[in-house]
Image: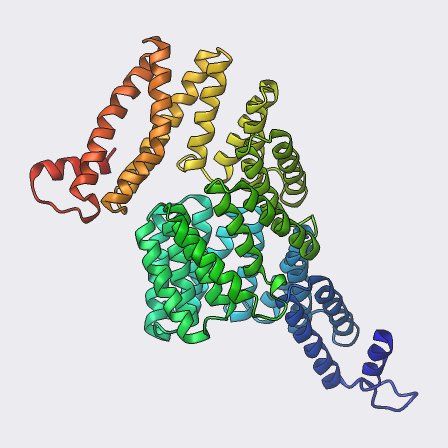
Length: 527
C-alpha cells in the first residue's frame, strides 16, 4: 500500500503525458514539503524510525528532481540527521548536519537565520556527544552572528545566550552561567512579556542551574513562577505544565522535602494519564524515573525497584537499548541496587551502561566517566581493589579533560583515589590526591561565596564536610610526614572558620558594615 501511494505521487510530477519528460517542479516541492512536515510530526511523537524513512523519501525526491545544491535538500538531510540524533545514532547524524551547514553557507550566506540555526543544531549534537569545546565554538559563532543581526535585544540572540549557558553548566563554568541566563530572560521579558512560553522556559533553565548549584530557595521561586505561567497559558493537563511539577518535585527532593516532592510527582503522573498515548511521552517517562529516584533516596526500595523496572521496560521499547534515554535508567537501577547492597545486580547494570555509552559517546565523555567511577565503587564494596585503581584514574582523566577540576564530581573522584591508596598503603600517592582534592574543594567553596545565600552556604559547606573529615583523618594518619599536607590542613582549618563566619554574616548581600566584614569578604574572594 505504501508503495502504491508513493507511485501515485509521481503521477503529478509529469506534465507532458505518458511519454513527456517535463517535471512539475512545484508539485515536487509541495510533496517534499509535505513529507518533511510529516517527518517533523513523527519526531515530535518520538517515532524516529518512521520519521527517518519519511525523510529519506523526501531526500531522494529532492536529489532526483531538484538537485543537492539547494535549501530544500538541506532541509531533507537536516530532517534525516535529527531522526538519527533522536535514535542516538550520533555518528550518522554529524556528517549530514555538517553538509547542511555547507549548503546553507553557499546558498544563503553566513548571516542568514537558517545558516545560524544549522550551527545551533550541530552544537546540540556535539553537546550530546560530549564534544563540549566543539559545541562552544559553534554557539559562539551563532551568538556573534545574531549580535550583529537581528541584534542584542532579539529573541534569537537570547536563544544563543541560553545555548551557551546550558553548555557552560555541562562544562562546570558556573561563574558565566547566571549572567547569560539572566540576560536572556530579561530580553524575553522585554520583547515577549512574562506570560510567554519562551520566557517560562528561560526561567526553568535558570531554576535548574540553581538547583544543581545548591541554591534551592532561588530554584524553588523560579519553578513556582514557571508553574504559574504555564498553568495560565496551557492548563494543568498540558505536558509542559506537568514538566514544571516534575522539576519542582526534583528540587524539593534535593532539599529533603520528600513528602512535597512525592505529592508533585504523583500529581504530574495523574495529569499525564489524562493525555492520549501518555506512556510514550518523555516527560511522563522522566516522571516515573524521578519517582523511582525519590523512593531510592527515602529508602523505599521496593517501590523504587518496581517503578524503575517499569521505566526500564518502557524506555527499552520506545528508544531501544542503544540510547542515552535507556542508559539513564541503568544508572538509577545500578544506584538503587548499590544502596541495597545487592552489588552483583548493581555491577550488571553499570557494566551494561558502560558498554552502551562507550559505543554511543566514546570514552571521552563525562557520562562515561561517571559510569566507570560508579563501577569502581561497586568493585570497592566487594573488595576487588585491583580493578578499582584503573577505573578511578581513567574517570579522573576524562573528567579533568572534558569538564575541568573545579567541580564536585572531580573532587569526589580525587577523594576516592586518596582513600584507595590509603587502603593500599601507597601513602605518597595518597598524599598527592588528598592535597588536590582539598585544594579544589576550597576553590569551589570560595566561588560559592559570590552567589549563595547564607543558608545555602552552610548547606554547601556541609556537603564538602565529608571531604574535609577524610582529609583531616588522612593528615592525622600521615603524622607530620608531609609538610605540604600539614600546610594545606592549616589553611583549610582557617578557611572553614572564615567561610562559616561569612555565611553567618550573610555574604551574599556583601554588606560592607565594618572592616572585619570587608577583610573576610576580600580574603575569601581572593583565595
